[in-house]
Every structure is written in C-alpha cells, then in structure tokens.
Length: 155
Image 1 (cartoon, rainbow, N blue to C red):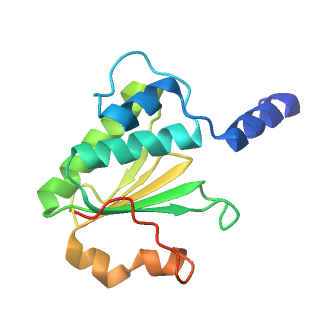
Image 2: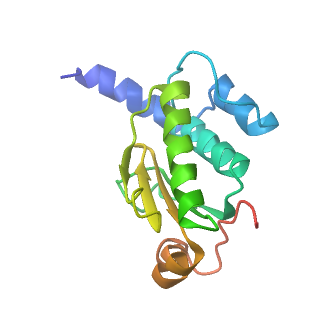
C-alpha cells in the first residue's frame, strides 16, 4: 500500500494536469502514439483519447469535465461511430494506444455488441455509441450544465 506522502504527491500531480510531452505531441500534430510508455496524467490521457478518436473518424466528440461533479474520473468523453464495427474498432484501437503510450490497462464493456462501448481509463471515462443508441441515452444532457457546450468536434 502506498504511503500517505506518495498518495499526496500523486494527487498534487493530478491537480496540476500537465500534459506529458508525448500526449501533447499526439494531440498537436496527430502523430501516432508509439514509443515507451510514459506516466499518464488526467490531461495527458484526455489528449491521447481525443487524438485517437479524431484519428479514427469519430463523430460528435463531446468532452465533459467531471472534476467537482463526480469521483469516478476527471473527464468523460462521448463520441459516435457510424456502425457497430466502427464503434468496436475505435474502442480496440483506443485501448491499445493507451496501453502502449502510458501502460494504462483500460476496463472495457460492450465491445462485443458495438452499440455502446464504455472504456474506463481511470481518469477518463469514454463512451462510444452508435448514433441511435447515443440519442436514446443522451448522456450529454445528464452531465453538461444547462448552456454548457462540451463539443470538441462536429463530424
């Protein structure tokens, strides 16, 4: 079990939310995520998630800041794929990229059906939907404050 000092240091580091140089490069120029794993921060993981989804042609990507709203993570990302096959493929590639870039072993639910895939990276919760399923559940409405727009891209 980590010491209290180690936990305090880790929490302080997460509060800073500094991008790792690797994640910043991936977010800035779309470079593929390769090389040795680096330590992930919430913002670094978020940048890598957004870059991966963008590279895989996800549609209507929405980012929700969960800090102060929930203890389950710092950010939530909601995106759509055009088909079950694309949704499953985006989830597979995202988890593989996070594993290689940061050593993050994500928990994944729903990849077999491809209608709604939930990926828990620890700091970032990712939902990838088929458009019809996303419209039915409307997660954005539950998590975004009235008038708040979390849209990252419109596909």
